[in-house]
Length: 419
Image 1: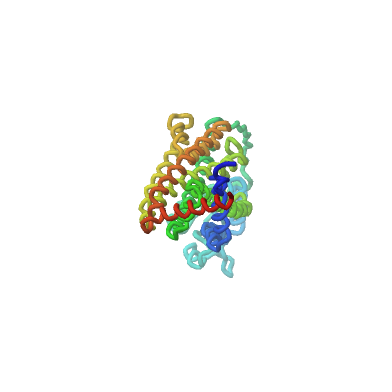
Image 2: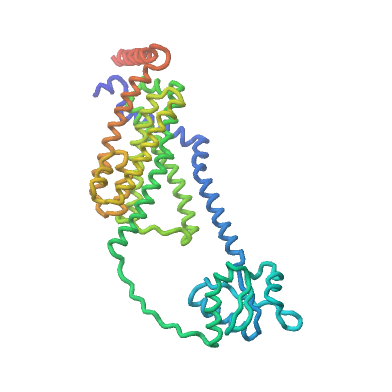
């Protein structure tokens, strides 16, 4: 049996599991977590409603039309010509609407028709197809001059123009096109990873500061190794973050299915969408653990909330610079800049996720994940040591000494009882 088992203490991993399970359950079952989930959904829901409303307004709004004040035969020829051209050119041509006639069957003057149209027409077309006259605001008639001339030329001939058939010879996309398309996917994946990391990593710091103020952290540190406390809190907050991302992803997936073709389509990544999503989860976990380790060290150095804000601001700004560095490295694959971005632990998750979207090789990702995990262990070790030196000396003088003395007394009592 090991010495930990003789003394009744848990191992580091077992103690970390206890802390992680305690924090994960406490946060997940709290009412605060429900509102935390709703926070990012409100802007998405409001944006979706605003977009659908604007589309409805655009759909119901009447397009500016031209009133046709010609004889019945010429007006019919102009409308038929417009429809024939629209079938070929699309709906970019202005709509034509027959103008209202008087009781005698004649048209009023174009200027009078414009005043009486109550917004139905933006201009009035009079004359004949051979000599059309367009009356209206200067900017309107200037913009519509070419379209009206084309419609009039079509109507004057009396039959559809002969449109030649165009033979299409599509070519396969070149390497440059594929690289450019995948670069868009890589940029989107990097941006999403950065936003999620920055939005969720701060939970580790807030949780640590709260328990530090309540002296709970000191009690935990007196009972179990400090590394176990740090590991437990990191993985508990990572689990909570993954639950939140799963909830947001479900809502986002439903919105994507509802919007369908209305959303822009990202090109498929080099490794395929399933593998890119899986690697995205892995690299988010590593980025979260790396940044969370730094935030835990900040919590060890800060005694008040104001100090936390002061110390965390430079880290946030540096993380933004790291993101820009990884984004630049993404544009020069295979260069020394990309290799440097992969080796720097804080930019490595972003650089490798972009690499997954651009290159199909999978073996480099295994090495990158192991490299990032090594740095997580180093940062947790450094942060826990810093916490042990600073926090265990906080509070009334001798608090840490009394906790350690009490722990030794409990251990010696259990040893005597076991003997």
